[in-house]
Length: 283
Image 1: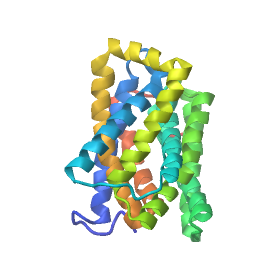
Image 2: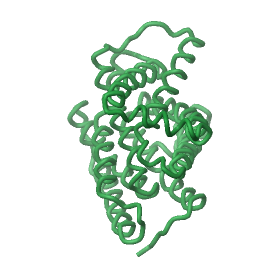
Image 3: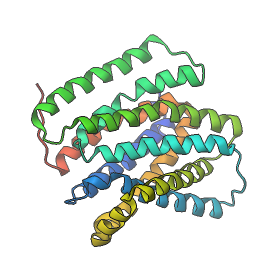
Image 4: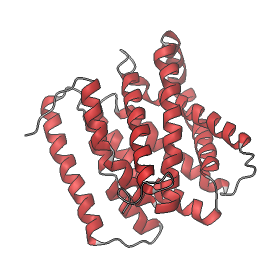
């Protein structure tokens, strides 16, 4: 339905190719940041930096495009920001405990929570093939995880808990984004600006109180190129990717967008193994 239909610049098939290229770059850039020795405890600080960049990009785009006003209620953005923070924060932090291919395979099972979220939030109904496809991805996830737990030193229970929390947030956020954009006719840029700027405030306060903010600043000040520099590239790629995914959410629905982003992960895993040496098994 999504991948094979059309080849024009506005077609879903073209969106799939753009998602593949951009999010592969995001994955590689994020993993590159985590190869910096000593950076693993600072996944939440990376999320804070990422949210700051996204907020700036969103504000600049809204200014250049002369988009004014807010269409989605603030109370909805407060929820979206919290879910966005959970999705990206736990996802980034889990990389300190799981190797990237393991994290990617875990995220492949987000189709199941998105399916459930669609039923509960938007009162949608899905066919047998939808559930079979989601179930097949779960089987692949389980097999890969069992292999990785025997071979990779990065496999960690805390990492699994973090990525599971990210998936729970994914169960809600895509469906809430779809419902909000269709109900209030809001633009992608508005959604990004308010979700990430409010999320930035949430995380800034939390990290300031916990003391992690100062620790992150001190560490990254010693490695500005590897953190803020690569973080800028990582965030720019991510911002472009989010715009495409939100377009898919608006036009095709949350489940279709999740399917596209899940399908491209197979190539992401292969690329990750090429650029970053990791053990792997087919058993």
